Length: 267
Image (cartoon, rainbow, N blue to C red; front, side):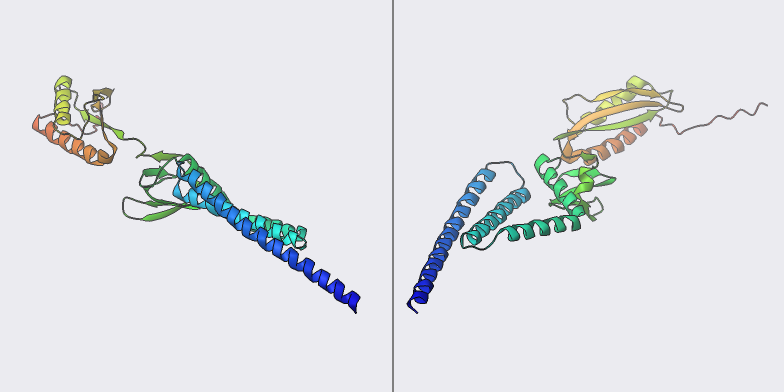
């Protein structure tokens, strides 16, 4: 009887001691995780990473640290951890196969957030769709079109296609062709175009506008007009230029010819 009591007491003392040490390791581990997360946040705040990627990195580090801590504590109190690790690995592989399309979007989202080909609020065109970027998430990016449609585009589509960012620079160049008749005085036409450009603050003086004959077409002399403006004013400036060129040409009796076809009958 005394022998069994001694063994039971020894076992109980040893088990209690292991549990106590495991609890201490767990508490110390939680404190260490908080310190690691605080240090990571401090580093990330000084970086230029997007807020979505910032939160993702913090959450990943937290999950990994907690899993390592739990496995360490279980192993310390004598619970076999090899099976536990194997189950986690198998579950991860199964989940990866089931959501491989989402993982593709996820990986593309990480690349977009790191490389930053565009930012929230930019006007972009991708895969035939144009719109202003409303939101960038890890799986989808949301665009708002000119006619107020909301489009969710998979990040893998964006990463796999050419993206045109119309808001990427402060300045944009307006390029138009003005067709005038062959009887028109080219120097006079160019001076009228210059007057229209000088009549508005939409257009930059530097770089200087380019006005020149671009093509001697079948029915008209086509003149290139290239002028710079603020990106935010691009459409206002373009519409102003087209409208006022038409008015100026009408006022100066500058002919804007229609396409013509001359047919010879042989008589």
